[in-house]
Length: 142
Image (cartoon, rainbow, N blue to C red):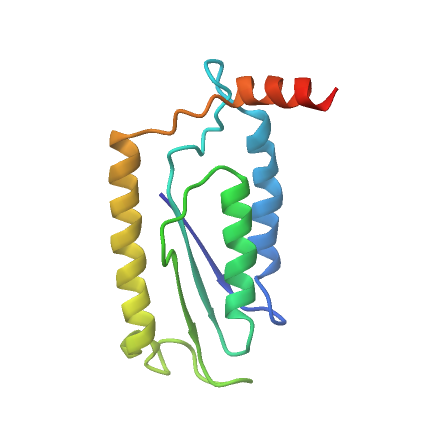
């Protein structure tokens, strides 16, 4: 399992979270010899966002797209976020963010659903043959 965590920065994910996604582009070149699946196939991912400005949902959607494109599986409710009052202010812990019911509920849903999906994928792996599908796409495209 992988969880990408980021603060909100200027209404979106941080530059580090974006950098991680950009570096993961190389995964698409690392398909296994048998069927071409990326090493991220049958792996589960989730997202955590924190900040004191709007943009949590935008950051989540950007990261969710990146993770899915790179071969990770995302369960329902694969995210949680906490957004304090806008502007400078106390940190997540100082603001009692760890006592925030919505955030805690989403954390529990995320963790439960990630474990559930990981268990399912361990027992029932994707059978996708990436190599054969690429060959089929090439034939369709000529």
